[in-house]
Length: 279
Image 1 (cartoon, helix red, strand yellow):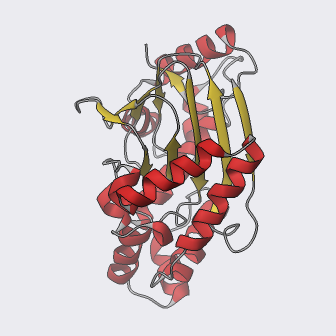
Image 2 (tube, rainbow, N blue to C red; image 1 turned 30 degrees about the horizontal axis):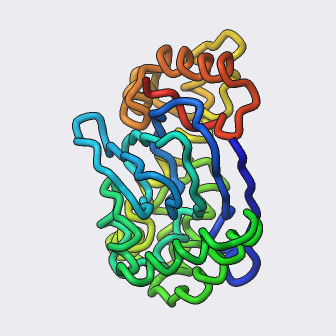
């Protein structure tokens, strides 16, 4: 697959980790994406794709793309073959300035691009992207659209400050301490987080801690799960195992098997990292 990405310039660089372009035949028709503190926007330029937000949910078809706020559980992405899209990896607080609704409404409930920006705008953007000469030009078109749609959000600076503190500590900092340092009450902080991130600061801290822990695991070497749990600050291995199932839908052992399968069958693939084969 062809994959290209870049960090946008100001004023988007504090909201977005990167803009990306993806085209080609996916390694698997269905990929499992564990829950992570990373909202996502996809503008689809190919055949519709399918999203199943949770093991018990029905798969839903998305033609123009989707916006996904911070998820609380693993979700499944069904790629067409071939696929073609551009997208945005946001910081936890970064999607909110581009939404007409609170981020919590998109938590585990992805919306289409039409639902967030309207049919004429979604169709016009897709047309301009499809007409661009090269991936770099497409990312420029997307960046310009995002700059145009950027709007102020009440409480954004507060949420950004607290979210960064959570990330810097790997989710290990007491949320009450962060609220006290910011001179706001826990109820107000939780409300602002739900509106901007989609989840409470406590939930974001759990997600950050789990994501950092799992991505640091060397799946090619023997793993002492008890040691992994202790080093990550979990109360015990049972607590860690519960978190593992909640965030990935898999047991730790099964996760390693699936990760090893991806590495074995598609070494150095553009999508290798967080996504897992779901078939």
